[in-house]
Length: 120
Image: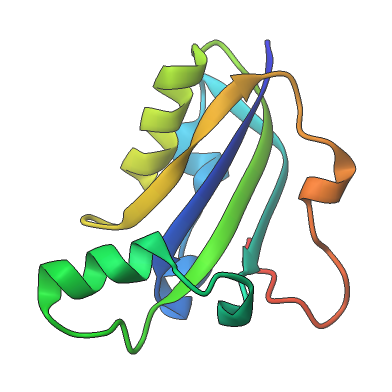
C-alpha cells in the first residue's frame, strides 16, 4: 500500500546526516521519496519539542535543531506500525511528534528548494 509519514523531530545535524531510513525500514517498506528540512525557529515561536527538551534536561537544546521529516513509501505495514518503525530507526531518546497515513503526501510536503537544509 502507498503510505506516508510526516514527523517533526529534534535532532543534531550529525544524527540527521547519519540516518538511513531506507535500510532501516527494508524489506517491509520501500522508501520512494524522502525529505528532511530544518524548520526555522522563527516559524515555530512555541516549539513543543524544545519545550519538552528543556523540561526534561533543564537546558535549551544547543546542538539540536527541529526538522520536518517526510516520507512517501510502499509498505506492508499499517500506518501506526509504519510510524513505530520510522521512530525506531531514529537515535534513542529522539523527541518527535507526527503520524503516518495511507496514501502519499503531495509534492509540496517535500521541500527541495536550493538553500534549504536537506538531510536525507
